[in-house]
Length: 526
Image (tube, rainbow, N blue to C red; front, side, top):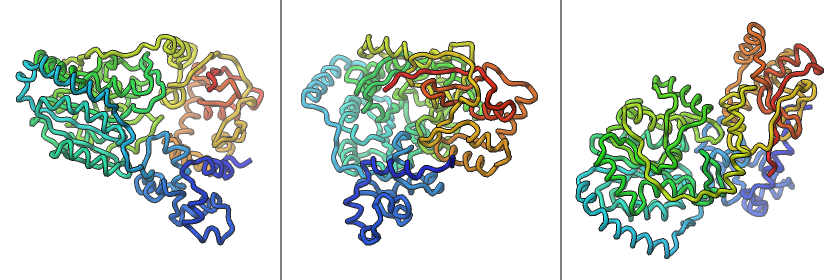
């Protein structure tokens, strides 16, 4: 059995993709029709190498240009996008239709203008008190279609003097939207960035371009959270556009924008203002991952730091000075990938944590938010976070973030299993442990293992190497096997989710009949 074979899977991925148009491909590239080859086969085997695009809606060459890691790995652009890119937020290469798809209805617009003018009257003293305040807005506009909604919130800030900076992603922008932004604010500064570091990378890069002493308050904004059917996060349920509205209503609503300015003016100890329900403490796996990255940059954090989930907030400009001194630019950040706890994830926490460490307050404004009681009860009962409090086992922080966080768990238990009964899933196929690359390496085949390490780095950005595996083996042989660091098994098919290398080592030592204690997880289907 070939652990690395996946041609049929590749074919099925392209066949299902809405970005492959068989008719268009044949009409655009007559040589394919003359060759008699199936267009999907042609595209997979040589079409993409000849710079053929799969359809009028996807520019593979632009995708490779924007995502150099994919180009360097010599991967088919559409295949990479469908397998990984879409889940990592990569959009370079997708041709955006020249229209704004997110619209604000007339009733909302009327309510907005009424509330805005009423708020200006109600808070006229606050406006007068802060007329000389220097305000900077930094907006990362990844989802261009959100501009119409964001524009109404920025309109609330017109009572004050502010500068606008908009950052956007190379290969993922709508020229029409950029023109509308310039119409809205003729003095806007725009910066185009590669798709690195989510919204945090561009924000920190912008800080290096400006003089913070020119400003009193900075509003950090982004366009995330528009299309979310439902998410459960920090013990709250958000549906549809709840997340987006919650982020913005906390700091730029018709009334809240003036409350923000008033809070900064009346209390010099306030360093950050945001929606109250989004000021949260991290679960311990995220605390550990954040602390690990902070230590690399010699940043000391409080153990139970707080931060603004969603990273839309107003912050005193002077509070950003220490962050700016880290000299982080877009080059420090890796390509945007979901499912990996990166420097960007750590820095969104560190920004707020450093404010509190300086003795300042993260102040929250109450924002109306639906409770969704029944959905919340179900989410709490099926949340994977409850695994973190079980002392029978220890879960790897990175694995939990990548493989379990956000998953719905019906039940879990610990029991013994023979090593020969453990399976491994790889690229859509099921293998036994003795067929897996780590076991094969222990039996002397280092080439197969090296290929496996490269695949994991390319697909999941997981660092693996012979040296790391050798160190693990040496540690087990010298210190023994930590029984709490048990394999994690999907109970539905006995597929190992974490602990493959340790299990392969035990298999090489004791054989298929040897039994180990493992954590079995039953996931909620669907």
